[in-house]
Image (cartoon, rainbow, N blue to C red; front, side):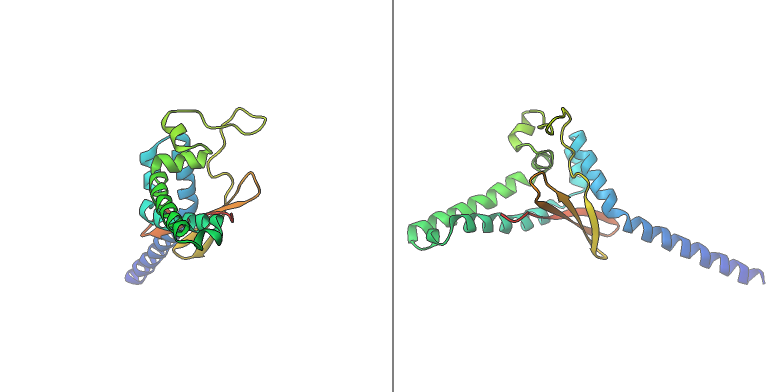
Length: 184
């Protein structure tokens, strides 16, 4: 009788531990977005780096930026050999630009509405119209799960477009791994 009670108690403890672990994992995207927001507001690049998978983020942004350059150049830029060479150089430079921007300092500057060199020079972030307060990084995201290991946080921008931040789970930790830019 005592063994069955002990076994039953161990079963309940195991179920509670499993439930707590699931709750911790499920709350990960919210905690990651809050951590990103706090790190940007505090100007703590090291804390921001804990919440961002920089190699994956660079890999996801590079083709998006290059695609925008090709689309902006139009069909005429691809018709001649010299124009095609220029377009190739421009897309290569875009890859370098993404590599330079997707750093803790660059990402924090983007989320604050500043340019990277303004953040590096300690130029204060721009204020919202009618207020002296700096804009809040990642303001009011709408979070949703895409799968058990992937969630997205959609942020409405001032111009009406939406920016989608994709968080990926690695073990028990959620990290920003992709940013889906709004349509050009």
